[in-house]
Amino acid sequence: MSQGPGKPAESAIPHEGADSSPHGRIIFLNGTSSSGKSSIAKELLLALDEPYLHLPVDAFHAMRSRNELSPEELPVVLHRTWRGFHRAVAGMAAGGNNVVVDHVLSEPWRLLDCLEVLRPRDVVLVGVHCPLQELERREIRRGDRPVGLAARQGEQVHAHGLYDIECDTATADAEECARRIRDFLPRRPLPTAFEQLRAKLRPELPAAG
Image 1 (cartoon, helix red, strand yellow):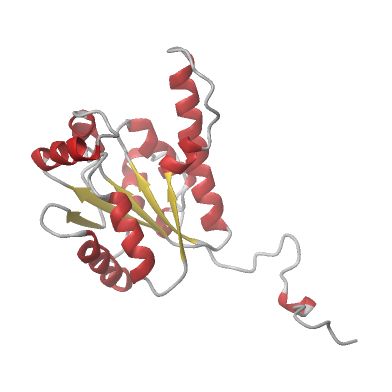
Image 2 (cartoon, helix red, strand yellow):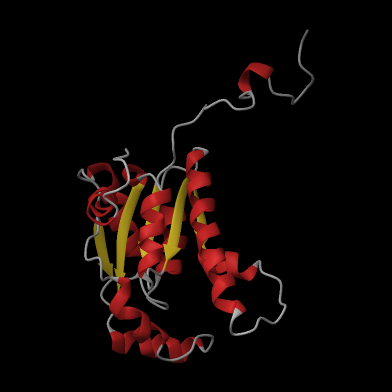
C-alpha cells in the first residue's frame, strides 16, 4: 500500500528504543560571566557544517517559576538546576544531537558532575578567557550582571587547567574564535581533555569512550 502524500515511509522512522544515531558531539565553552561564551556559541551555529543545538545554562534558569526563594532554599534549587542541566546535555548528545554548551565551572562539583555524566570522548573542552579589566568593562556596559561577578568566578573557573583548545575574547572576536574551534575539530588529538580530567579527578569511574 502506498503512503499518503508527505507521509514518510515506516522504514525511515526509527522504532521506539532503537539506537539509530551515534552520540553527538558536545562543544563545551567554559569561562566566567561576560567572557563571551554566548557570542561564540551563536557564531558556531553559523560556522559549523553539521546541525548543532545551543544549550545555555541561563535558559534553564529562566525556565524556573518566579516564586521568591529564601536564602536557605536558593542554593538547593540552583544546585538541582545545574545537575539537571548537565543531564539534559548528556541526554541530547545520547540522542545523537550535536550540542554547544556555555558553562561556568566556578564550583568544583560542577566539573566533577560533568565528568561523570558526559561521555568524555564526545566533549571538546574550550577555555574562554578574557582579562579582568575587560570583563569589568563589559559588566558595566551590560548592566544586567553585578560588577565583580566575573572576578569572583575567575579563580575557580579555569582551576582545572586543561583544555582541548583555548581562546581570548579580548584579542579575537566571537566570529574568529568560532572559526578556530571549527577548524580544530577535525584534528582534535586524543585523549581528550575530558578523558584526561576524568582519569585524574574521577579515577573511581570506569574509563569511557
